[in-house]
Length: 265
Image 1: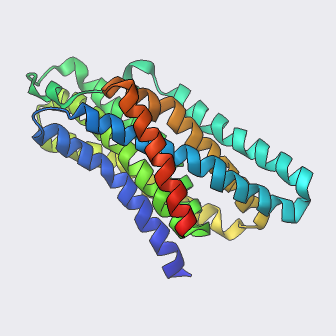
Image 2 (image 1 turned 135 degrees about the vertical axis):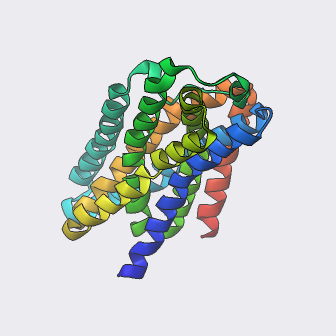
């Protein structure tokens, strides 16, 4: 049992630590490779959207149909799907717009002179906002990986890509506020660790109560969370960082890669 849960926990930890990669890019890269970042964000969004509708929602519907029957099962899965969207939407609305981590920030901003004390609150609130936002993502990655490890790997990889620009977003204002690259890196990394914390709480709170109905609802809710993240965060950020067509190629590429991997598994 412990080995079965260890792998999902490690996947979630790896996805969360990707914020540190974003912070490191902000510190050491002289220029933002906008085309690559735009394509990567589109790729991540394509993976999430395809997985949500083709795999997660379908599996949730089949699981719930076995317990409740086809029509009631489909109704419960649909309700859980929009419930996931509602949950992540409420969390997103609680984040003040001025500190919203979705705003794309190029690494060139690191060249600006730090030490503006007025940005201290913004930097800390950005880190807190990302931590709150990453919490349900950690639960989603963990619960999916427990049910289907190969699918969990795909979702963890997509979330890791999505966390890289978030690491850039949190490290820049914190660097402005403190003038310390080390503080910016540490706080950026800590904001990403909300994901394994979410996974740990899912382990403690959900695993003892796990039933086929609860698992079906979780899978459908995760699908809703993934769709919201893709539409609200990844796709707009991909267009903001680069050309629209590059983001579109990434979306189609992500869907194609996910479709091929599911066929081969």
